Image (tube, rainbow, N blue to C red; front, side, top):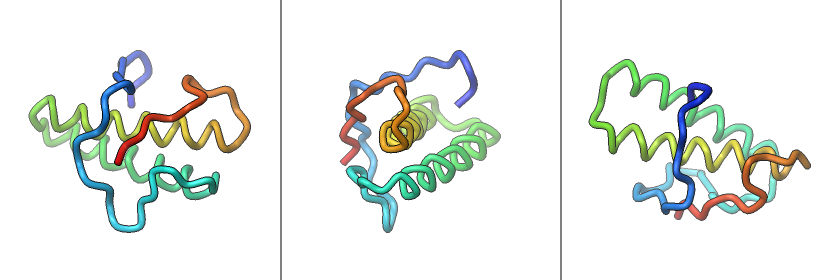
Length: 86
């Protein structure tokens, strides 16, 4: 996500989880991995200029994983309770 872009984490992400993705993982390394995956996917999609709702779904999932990563690493993060993305 580009700095300054607002993402609404209060809405559930309406897309299926990727194989191996566990939204409620308690493993910081897993959360960091999925944050990196969704960062790459979001960057790639941005280049394709998809419909805004498609990009927004990936941005919300990225925001979830960044928050989950920070929470599990003991950081403050922007949200102490990551959004349920199932």
